[in-house]
Length: 127
Image 1 (cartoon, one colour):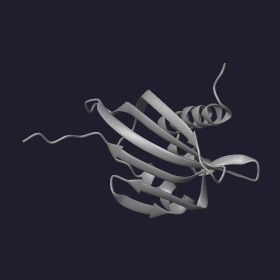
Image 2 (cartoon, rainbow, N blue to C red; image 1 turned 90 degrees about the horizontal axis):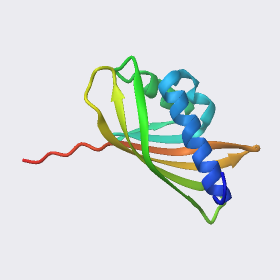
Image 3 (spheres, rainbow, N blue to C red; image 1 turned 135 degrees about the vertical axis):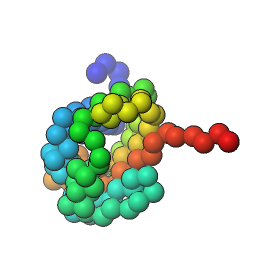
């Protein structure tokens, strides 16, 4: 990982792991959330590991592939890591669309988990 800071290393590893799970088996995403985690998905709020996994598993596509364009990571004063992602996704036979996602990562019992997750498709209405 070269000269990356520790928070960049942790954030990058988390991002790689998250999208690998999301693209291959969304049911496994529960391992990265905790009961206090919050998800905002396209403006809708979900609280707790079970509600988040239920939402992610209920999304209306069979297959998905994420392509990460850029990611940034910063440490917080309370020893967490904020990670932002910009990328594209392709779900089933739908057109490729852009997306933005933000994660707040916290080390709990020597494991990095996601306490906050915000997702938006990058859709624009010009009219």
